[in-house]
Every structure is written in structure tokens, then in C-alpha cells.
Amino acid sequence: MDIVLRATAAFLFVFVLLRVLGRRELSTLEPFDVILLVVIGDLLQQGVTQSDMSFTGAVLAIGTFGLLVIGTSWLSFRFKAVRKVVEAAPLVIVEHGKAIERNLRAERLTLEEVASAARLSQITSLDDVEWAIVESSGQISFIPRSGS
Image (cartoon, rainbow, N blue to C red; front, side, top):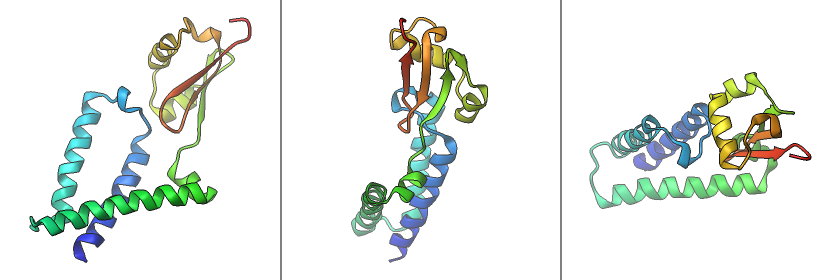
């Protein structure tokens, strides 16, 4: 039971940590982000299972994480209030071709990163963007200006 409680506490800690760190797509992770995720995994294992190297301990820890992920997913599907806590709301970062600096800072995005994402969407200039929105997944959606 001790492993289940430690796994639950670790899950909550990682959830809060990842919300604070911000949203990024897996394809846009920097090398430091990848290192952080790997190290978190290793440190979590040590903290959750402590000196229990048994198969049962591993199954309990992994099973607890799996059930918490499924439970969180189901709760966010079922209840809008939970969804607001679990998923980040979409955020407008460009409006009528002009960057919203406050929102870029909140997402820790540079104008160069947004321009690069726009080029990948076949948009040559942010002046041609009506809206650019960081979705809850971390992906940036672009809505081009009419006539562009």
C-alpha cells in the first residue's frame, strides 16, 4: 500500500510540475526538456519504489500511474470543471498580424519560434496571420487573413 500512496503523490507532483513547465509538443522539445523527462522518470522510480526491487512493487507503481492517468482522462471527459484544471486553455499569441507579447512570455515562446511554425504552415509572414493560437496540446494553429 505504501508504494501506491507514493506513486499517487509522485503522479500529482509530476502533473503539477508539467503544468508549471508549460505545454510543448513532443516534436518541439529541446534537448534539455528530453533530459529533464528522462531524469524525472528515473528519480520517480527511486522515490516511489525506494528499495523495493520486486516485480510486485513495479507492477503496483506502474499500475497506479496507469489508473491515475485513465481516471484523470475520464474525469476530464465527464466534468468540464476538471477539464479546465487538467487541460490548458487555448491562448491567442498573434492577433491581426501583431504578436501579443504578454501571451508569448506566458508560453515562453519567441517570435522566431512562432514565425518558424508559421512557415511550416506555408505562411510566409506573421503579417498574413489573422490569429495564431497555442492549442492545449502545445501545437500552434494559424488562421490566415482573408485574401492571403
